[in-house]
Image (cartoon, rainbow, N blue to C red):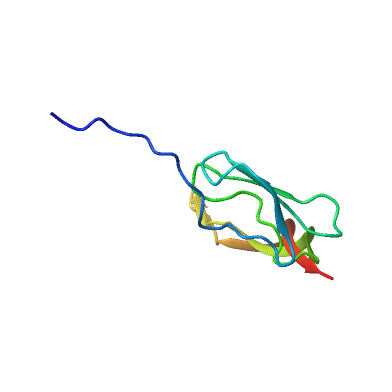
Length: 111
């Protein structure tokens, strides 16, 4: 008595963009697992973006063709807390240490 369920391919449309000055070199479409290759004149290589199962494209390219992504290691301050405790009537207060750790972050660098 009910309708037969139909499957529909997921489309990626939300976060697609081509860098300013760039162009689409090849494309298989905008559905799940489709691939788009983006290139910039005067640059070797390019970006391959794939339509993912969350509806978003992978591998976000830079905003402009004269920009590139760089991974830089930056210092980040973190706090480590040891909670107060009491063992057999001997109590120690909470202890807080501030440490610097290094994390890799991606930056867009434009010439």
